[in-house]
Picture 1 (cartoon, one colour):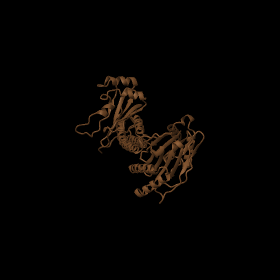
Picture 2 (picture 1 turned 90 degrees about the vertical axis):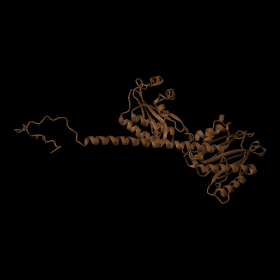
Picture 3 (picture 1 turned 180 degrees about the horizontal axis):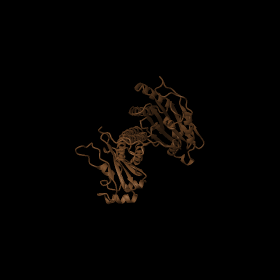
Length: 463
């Protein structure tokens, strides 16, 4: 039958060919079964898909642009078989942010690479290349330089930099898609002349498209965060007032979602000073707007009746209940007379201030009170205290405590320990006091890109 080999091998027990039948040819190398090649190819595809899945899973867990770029560089180096690389974030719309990240390259090495004229460097051609006049949305192709020493058309500076840094080849990939546009480029450097195989190019291309979409999402989040932070800063005091007898310092950080924590310090008649901190419930633009309205209203009430903090907060509570019944807020207002070193304060569901000095570090004992907008009628007694010369009164919002990740009682204990450990040499500067508390309580800092509560500290040191 057609397609079937008519030659049948003899029985292994046959010692000589049958009469009239030619002897069989000597056996050759075993031929793999017809499905073996397909199985090998499928196994290769599964391996590639598994690798891509693992790399994209690691990338999707990044929440900051620089962190994502580092992950892209590391994954790309594994996929194309390189050891070093550089990623440049430079959105085509020019709205930023811009960033340059290296893998296995020092900061000075990145600066050296950037001295190569952009029109001749591979990543520069991807960043500055003109769009296709017929298909402007078309993503540019990757650029491979197999051997820097022999590649035609390279700028002499390119060869000089390659020799100085010890790389012989490069592979540049655009970080761009038709949907996201051009966000930047990544280039990987080989120690010896080389270029990715077709399989490696295919894998890095798939990964690059996914990475670009992820970077585009992080870019949108970062831009929104910057806008929110800018609005929040504009709603807070541009500078602190100068009032004889007291030194002021403030530290503020808005979370990426835009919370409603705020502070204020305003001079009042007869050399007095009003100090306030507060927090509005909710996040986002609506919380920022409510925070701005609340702060402006408190300033008006403080000017009219600041010597009575209970009356100030009562008026504020009535306004909040009438104008924004679905929102609550905490607040603390202090009426300070620096010349007499006297403070009268009242709080509405807010954390107690902390007095920091050479002889004591203690929380101010305030009565329990509900946040504004929680009860039909808010009321709480005021508290009076007399800071000693050189003591600092620290006002703060609950975000400082929540950022620690501890239960509230544990967070208060840590805050007290941090305040107690302020070096004696720093206690003359309220800014240094606030910074020490922040560093001690939150060793990882107040990275604005990390999701978390707003944080406000307002420190007043009395002479």
